[in-house]
Image (cartoon, rainbow, N blue to C red; front, side, top):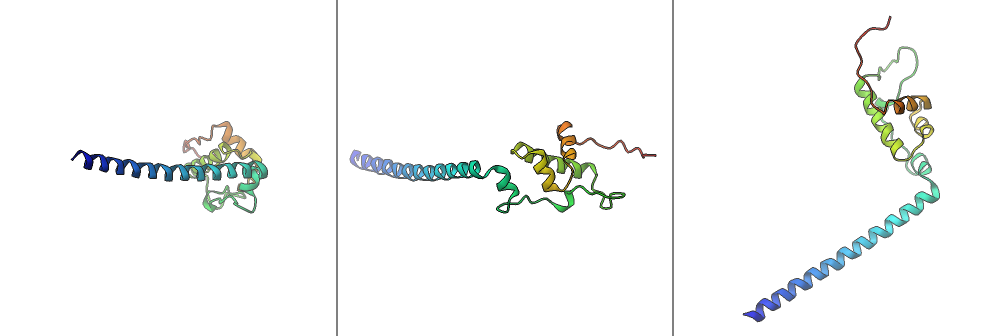
Length: 131
């Protein structure tokens, strides 16, 4: 009886050791890939990778700032501005400069500076009409 228990325990330990080896191999592969990504980021620069032809920023059309008389598409609602500023904050926190964000969104850099000065938190409208 003890021999069977010992043999089963040895078998289970062997299975665990094999799985540990598999995990170690997966971790080493991921570590190598991360090191390669870091060197690629360092050599090309984050802005080139994000703004360049390899991976362009995908800007949702409905969140782009509108220009022109009377803001024809009307995307200055609180929800739209809050979403836009949230994306700007994430892009700024990821290392993009204000100018790079503005170029990608097709707006003036002062729009991003204004959002940054307000800590990327849009205020709700008071509902008063401008006269």
